[in-house]
Structures are given as C-alpha cells and as structure tokens.
Amino acid sequence: MNIELLLSLAIIHAVALVSPGPDFALVVRLASQESRSTAIASAVGISIAILIHTILSLTGVSLIIKSSQTLYTIMQMVGAGYLAWIGFSAVKGSLQHWKAKVSVNSSPFKLNQLTPKQGFMQGLWTNLLNPKAMVFFIILFSAMITPDVSFITKLSATVIMLGLSLIWFVLIALILSKPMIQQRVQKAAPAINLFTGLLFMAVSSAIMYNLLEGVMVLSESAI
Image (tube, rainbow, N blue to C red):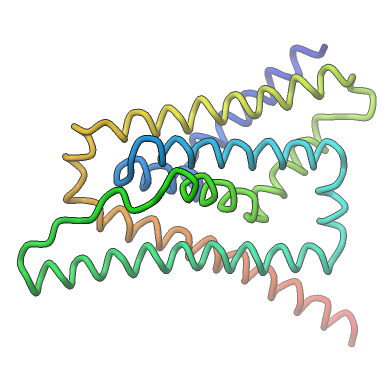
C-alpha cells in the first residue's frame, strides 16, 4: 500500500471538497431550510456520486466517456440542463417569496418541503451529472494512479474519497440543520436560494459554453 500516494490524494480531495461549488451550495441550502434527515440524505447522495466517479475513473470508464465525442456531449447537455433546472427553481422560489413579502408584508419562508429521498436524489444527480466533477477525477487519477499501483491502494483510495466526502458534507448538514441555526438563517433563506440558484445556472452556462466552443472547433476543422 502506497501511503504517500494515499495521503496526497486525501489532501487534494479535501481541498476540492471545501472549495465552494454546486455540491457545497446544495448542502448549505438544504441544511438551513429542510429537515436534518433531508440535509444528511443530500450529503450521502453527493458522496455516493463521488464514489461512482471514483470507481468509473479507476476502471477507465470515465476516460472512455470523455474520449467519446457523442457520449461526452450527451453528458454535458444532460448535466447542464439538470443544473439549470435546479438553479432556475431556486431563483424562482426566492423571487416569489420576496414578491409575496412585499404584497402581504408578512410571509414566512416555507421550510421542510423536500423528503429525504428527494434530498438524496438532488445530491446524487447534482454531482453525478456535473461534467466538471468527472473531468476532475479523470485528471486526478490519471496523474496519480499508474498501472503499477496495487489493487489494495486503489481500494484504499476509493474508501478515502468516500469517507472524506461523507465526513465533510454530513458535518455541514448536521451543523446547519440545528433548529437554533435554522431559525437565525430563516430570514436569509430567500437570499441563500437566490445565490445557490445563480451559482447552479452559472455552472450550467459554463458547461454549455464549453460544449458550444467544442462544436465550433469541430465545425472549423471539418471545413
């Protein structure tokens, strides 16, 4: 077992986890506005998606998808569409709340609208359908996991990636889902939704931009 390699992977993955992105934003949003079980379910969903990305990258499946223009284009389109839909829904809910608050002058933000299953699925698809996540794992494992690395080391790397993901996202879910904290951030819930929605839509736009850029390059090379 290559301890030095595993430590390097753990550090890189930990840095990636704490960096703000769609996964982090989703857990913050659900943990501050939904039930604790729903927030934890979303954290587990994200972690399972990371486990799937890890396995697909280690087995070379992700690289095959990335190398196939058709498969990767489909994934980009589906991923961008899903992230855009989640983002639009969050922004729409935020704006509707502000509009209602202006008209009635008092409209408490509705909490606990999602079931744990819905939270899990949102977490799973948010990470799994994000092409940037897949590319990250392809680059990470292509650079650090060489053919001579033992099966035990690969298995240990998989456990580490899953374990760190669970610890980080479940910790966020546990902290922000405390009733005292939820009460304090309830007034900021529409703003959190607006920020989360705009972030998801920005990531979706970036994916679509990269997709269109690739299509244009192919068109120019074909001429």
